[in-house]
Structures are given as C-alpha cells and as structure tokens.
Image 1 (spheres, rainbow, N blue to C red):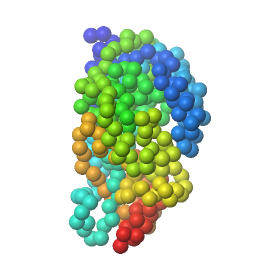
Image 2 (spheres, rainbow, N blue to C red):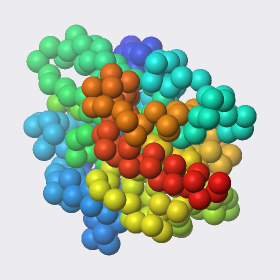
Image 3 (tube, rainbow, N blue to C red):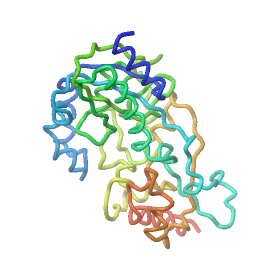
Image 4 (cartoon, helix red, strand yellow):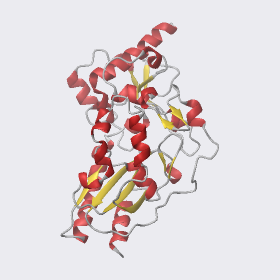
Length: 313
C-alpha cells in the first residue's frame, strides 16, 4: 500500500467515518470567511478575527506543511458520562419536580477534543513510522484552520444549509479533525456519500428558533448555540425568549435535517444548577463540552429556563 493508503486505512481503523487527503494551500472558501467576519457574523468571538490572516496559510500552524489528512469522526454517545447526565427520559411525566434542560447531542459525552486528540496521536505515530524525518501535527477546531473547507475539498461531503458538513450516512453529526504533514502526499478522493446538496430543502432554515440561518449562511448574533455556549454575560430578552428548554447548545437545525439519524434527547435537572459550586461543576461536567460555558454561563442558562417555567405556571 502507498503511504496515503496506509494513513487513510489507519484513520478508518481509528474510527473515522470518512477521510481524505488534500494539498495544504489557501482555502477555497477563505474570501467567503473574510466576508462573514467583515459582516460581523462572528458576534463577539473575537478570537476568529484576531487570527484572520493565519487562516490563509496553514504554515502558521505547522511550518513547512505540505499536506492535510482530513477526518470526519462520528458524534457518539458510547462514552456517555452517566454521573453528569442521569436519565431523565423525556419531556413529559417529570418525576420529583425535575425541570428538564436539554443538552446538545454532541456534548453528552467526554469532550470530543480529548477523544479525537487521542485518535490523532495514534495517527501521528503511523505518520512517524512512514516518514521518520517528517513532521506532523493534529488539530481539532482550535487552530486557525477552516476545517469544513478542508473537508469539502477532500470530498468528505458537502456543506449543508445548516452550514455544517453533511457526511454520507452520518449527515452533520460528525466532528472534523486534521493531521497536518510536512510531506507531499497525493490528494485522494473522499467518500462524500449519496447526497451532494440540500436541493430545495430548507427545513433547518425554517425551523431555526431565532432566524440565525438563511440561504446566505449563519449569523452567530442570532444563534442560540452561540449565546448559550460562547457568550459571556447576560442574554438579550429577544434571544432569551426563544431558549425554551435548551440549557447547552441547540440541535434544531440538525434534528430536522432529513439526512441525520434521529437521536434521543438528553436532559439535566435544571433545579440542580442554581446552587451548584465550582467544584461540583468541574466534577460533573469538567470532562464534557458543557465545561465550555462555565458554571456562571450554565447558571445563567438555567435561570432563563426556570423563569420561563414560572411564567407558564
């Protein structure tokens, strides 16, 4: 087998549902990304604009980079943290006065950064065996790399109207990862799956609770996931009124997508949150994506839900 075949085969062995290799060059969608930033659609996620120029050249991440191995990793619940997310079966028949707050599907597990970095370390070991004098670096959405653009170029799928990569039978329920390499690897066709576009479907756009999605893309200034996870401080009333029972993230644009398999919603008891200490928060959520919003953010989100419950009583 060629080095490219070995790397892609190893990626599949490590759990990737699709993988491909591309040349490390200026991203095809860079100008679109710059327009998105210029329009202010990144809200106050200033870390994106602060690294604006770095997105143009992956040498900012790995000097001498020539190639990228792009992986789509499934969002799974096998590593579900039972202590963090005890069973609250559904939205009806709440027992013991529990108030359910829904957690985004991807977050109901060990933090995907940790899980996928372990995968990338193993793939990097294969790279070192193939290229003892070469260098590589694995990244999972924290480096200035346009991962979705790379996955699109690699043929792993297409970008749906929910602005997420649609990857074969997994739809958009995947996380992307990249192994950067200083070696010249031959670009390989990916395995994008049965679909190449959303066609006339606009279910995600029509279902978005705040109108954050449009045919032009996503405006984070309206996105519930941004407000509930990334934003620090109070949430404006017009956004808070659309939160419903979501305490971390928003899955609406994925739940309504016909390419995505249905998933069972997972909830936590909101009544546990207001008196939670930092130590309790770290013990329960520290190794899950919920840690991203911090204890104060989770309390803020819980308070919005509790106020909504009180208004309905």
